[in-house]
Image 1 (cartoon, one colour):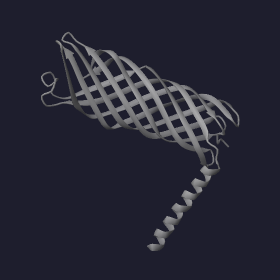
Image 2 (spheres, one colour):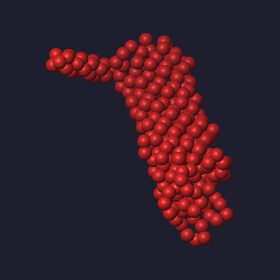
Image 3 (cartoon, one colour):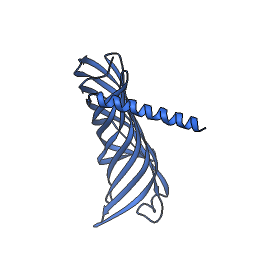
Image 4 (cartoon, helix red, strand yellow):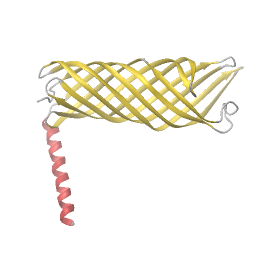
Length: 240
């Protein structure tokens, strides 16, 4: 048993040394993209419990769903090394902004003023190249979402803000139309899927000269986003 444990530790140590050596002798490369982004779904369930503002209007949970075809985004990734053939690994980050004019509350469309979703994500990234012109990109990580919904009614105005910390997976393809040893230029397309780890909500109601603010629990949710755009890689891309 001790021999097996020693062998496992030795293998793990050799693997760490191998990967570290690959990083030390590799030159970093940088990938940037700018994308059109379509937010297919950003949904959550809000618990209106207790004696809050909405207690007299809605008891239990409220299903909320946002979608938006109007979005822009961008990403930046630094690839620090190539431990295996045709594989680049590093750290990726991305940002996107979506506008919307209506949302669904319990399957009913509600008109929204000043509605937006702002997202930032980051995590370890890997890019696997199939030949010179095609690459698969994957970046699992953490996403931070900020949602803003403002609704005007005859009685006043309501502003709903939701903050989500989510586990996110980004998967995409890169088609390099122009590629040299130093620079690659092409098209990118892919999707992001996220599930919340923790969420916070604030509701502010203004009417009849008074302003009330309360917090409600967000119990579930998910996000699905598609993107397409242009990307550029600066530095040596491991595509042998």
